[in-house]
Image (cartoon, rainbow, N blue to C red; front, top):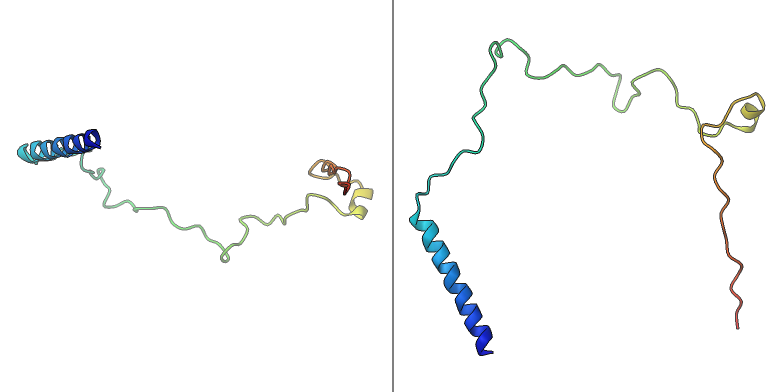
Length: 99
């Protein structure tokens, strides 16, 4: 317990010395980056691009309607190919036997 108390006291003393040393230094801070400067002719240029013209919130950007990943049976008979390969069969274990 005595060793632990001595270690805590040493830590508090080191903290106090560090704070005193920081306070004694010049408090002037360095600037990390240069201030922003405007480009020549920036007053005449728009600040951001114009918003794209849309017909409403969430509308699709093109006129192509979405297609299902798996065409229905009639479409497959007509020659439509599925966009995705068939899903693997689920693997199940035999039921647990009760004792």
